[in-house]
Length: 247
Image (tube, rainbow, N blue to C red; front, side):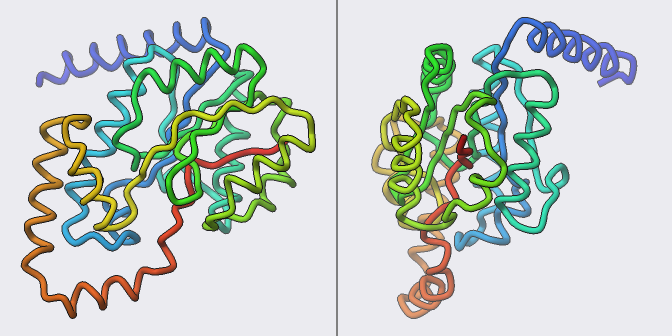
């Protein structure tokens, strides 16, 4: 593409984002690592192509809502651990003047535009929105700035299958109205890929092709090697979920 044309496209995109920001009280935060970083931490051989496609997919879905959005990869995150990094990201978005944030990750291929728009509407009704994942974490959280507390957020039991129950109890004890979206499966392991493949009609053809390739590759590995990988990555069985903040 010609350099001048690229600059023109960039200016138009920046202008579009500025208009969206000015007209919306809600922003979407995509808190997701790059494909390279995800492939380092999740036990899926050849995972780079998968996570690269997932990153493209979530950005496309988010963009389709016409809500302003921000992508925080490891290049934009700062903090000693996950809780600190995400808390800082939330604070950065609220500091831009938004009243509500819808936070998502990049590893839930069944997440749709409708989930995001429904979350936006629920936030207008003063609801705290949770999208629970199968493993006990979250794939989405929607919150108002008044429901956000750094201290409480940092004390959440991340990477635990009790996370959803823990958050729900805290919200109820604080008399905050909660709305749960449908339970979805995120991708942490090869087993998750196998499940998602069964419901392939709900994902794009490009993502399906990559999943099929990875599954075919995994079938060629010996049972001993598969068992070895499984034992190494047991600690990753519970995804962090899309982070949650508490009052």
